[in-house]
Image 1: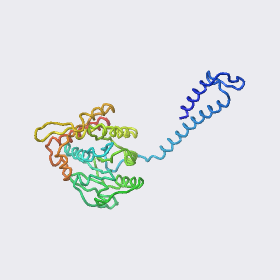
Image 2: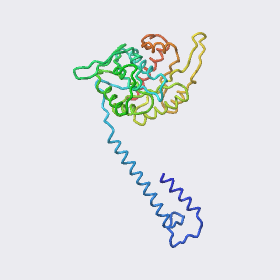
Image 3: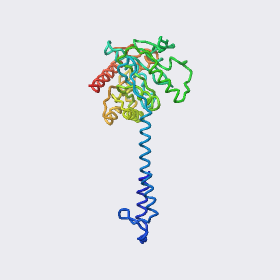
Image 4: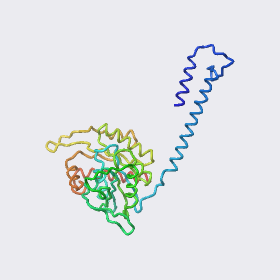
Length: 328
């Protein structure tokens, strides 16, 4: 703003009539200015310098206030699954990604953390109910189904109770879900992030080393706009973006097998090219995925030989490959 005013003032002075008394004029470049205007210019320069100094102090203060990243005990790699907006199938993708990792390699151990405090979906998707038990060290034991230990705010509150919390309470809850859970030994912890780019995302990325982020979006333009914001946020906080998942990419009619791109075609590919990342895979808009999700039987375990399950397994394999490439 100071630079803008400074340039604007120069323009005004250049447009002033000639004939200013040289005895009371000072020189700024080729423009003759009275001392009163020079005082304003000096003030603008000081203001600009002061602004830069203030910004630097704020940056240093924020850097001092950031928490130190500490690994989660027993967890080798943390993968976050995120989206810029809700309703694009992020939680379903997170669940089937976790199960896909295990399906591709039965020797790996995978956990699932539901970080969507306001709208937890993992209990429904994984068909889990109940409250976690406590260990002797006062840590919560995850609930387990399909061989995947899970933790969610949905285990701690009733299904129909709204979580009406302010930011500090949400941050405290996230800290407990991260640090006060007995995860055992996990090769991967898949974190289902809330939609958007808010406090929860920043809190997790600043507290825990993240191996990589998977961005989920439909091919629709409006969804891709928010997906790009999400990807840019992770880049700002130095979290590697492993790639994009294009969900609901195509609908195939069960009667005539005609394919329709309801939300557009290949939108995620264009965004991936812009961001310099890859598309990890396409997930079709299929009734089987919706039905198995609603009944708590994810498609990777309930229909392991279906094309829909194969799509999730392909994404899981792409995620592992990208993690190996980035660590190598």
